[in-house]
Length: 177
Figure (cartoon, rainbow, N blue to C red):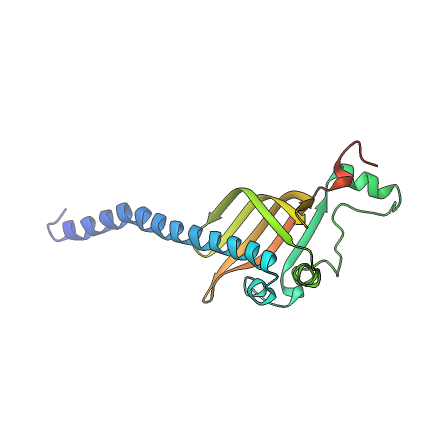
């Protein structure tokens, strides 16, 4: 090994050793920014702020944003007693992120969504967030389940690209008919 190659080798070793620390700092900042998106989502529902809510999404066009629910099995079985053709994951044109905020804004009753058991995974450009949720109308839980978001980091910050969620509600309770 020549003496001229030692500085180059030292540089590459330093780059490899320092890269994970640099990435961890960025990931921590991204996680904090994604948590801010989650807080802003909750606040927009509570305050019935459609403009703030819409700004959280990658596009304001419902066709551009994935938004899908999945009924849990007990709930689905009860629905099938009156609608035999019901399926676990029916895509409904009326079920969009815009429809949610429009319903929240249109009602005088308070609406809120609470999150717990949050898990965020990101590389700084894309992210997935999963959490347990409870949706409340007038302070009472109407439905709950697991929710998952996909986000992308844009020039305008982190934006929600898709949402999938399971639905448990009063039909999910075994003794309720």
